[in-house]
Image (cartoon, rainbow over all chains, first blue to last red; front, side):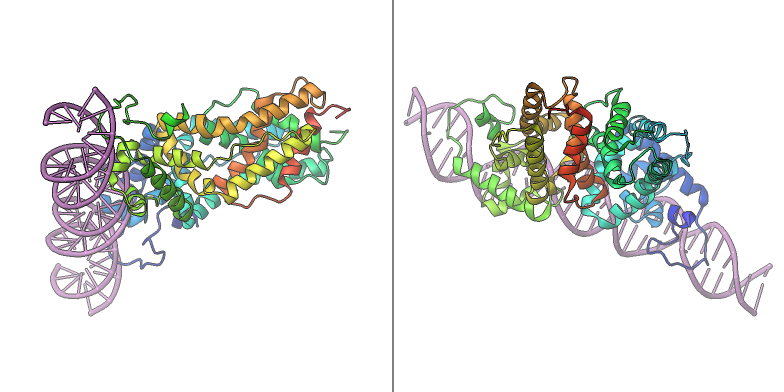
Length: 207
Length: 207
DNA sequence: CCATTTGCGGTTCTGGAAGTAACGTAACAG
DNA sequence: CTGTTACGTTACTTCCAGAACCGCAAATGG
């Protein structure tokens, strides 16, 4: 499944397997060049022509694989996603702290931070892209958060009335707010403070 | 001061007062047309040519007043900002609840929600614009939140260790996260839940 | 081994939007 | 009246996303 997403044969989806096959090296070269450019200049300044130049490939060769610049970028980001070790530290507090700090790291130390602002604009105008981004990047990441919260509830560290989606938004939202709107750096103590906040409300005595 | 921001004579800032003066009706017509278009199609789809057409004005007349499309849009948004009644409801909980619900309203019922995604992208690429937006829209709005929190601390409803910036990000961040990233509608109970969360951590017994 | 089909890949083109330039004319200041 | 600046019109430049077009490479069928 992931193969068809990474380099769909025919943008439309369906396509025969006859005729000259695509050069798989090109897929890699294009994605590599995209990531490289993204980390240098950010989404808006990335042009497909420049990606083509760096990958030593022609522009149509790119458009044959991805229907839009934005789709190319999303898929390039996906290749950068770590499998995401589902570390169970033993406590909900520990898990959430680790996840929050990992997200801070992703947003500030990987190209994702430079990609997001431009991608947000495209997503607002292109529902298909928005769905891709959410399904391929946001949701897979949130799986770990949900798992940590579920475990916390099962262990009795967190109240059974814990609103998981709400907690998730609370931990994650402020990070995006700083990154996209205020531009202020994320406070070093943020992760701890945010977890404390959640525990003060949904933690149980025995937690 | 606000006058010079709304329709600066000469994009550069300085400018003489000799010669034919600008038609002030034009400023209004342009801003009105901009807001109208923004609320219909969102930031990216707004073209300066279309603004000019609707305002019955020429394109150079617009560029004489604002150096970029993005600056025009920011100033148009500023004209839409309500003075912002600093309602003191008597309790920090009440104040924060009202402010949160007012922000939800602004983000979902005014053009701001349609403008933000595109503006976020421009801000990431244009530091001058980013500063304008933060100074003219974000900061003025946050003044009320800070005042409410200060009063809450002064009254003893909130702990003196309350981290004001952190609380502010916590209440506000998830709203932007939903609007810009997940696209999910904001839960009807969000404001109350968020305020409860903050009070569980920073509220004092007597609050 | 050759002919045919399929579609890859490169060169070139189109379309749209931001922003600029040039010019004739209109309106204000001194 | 003179200088200066605004305004409209028209045309232009630049940039980039994306589409046409065409020659040729690669797999298949005989």
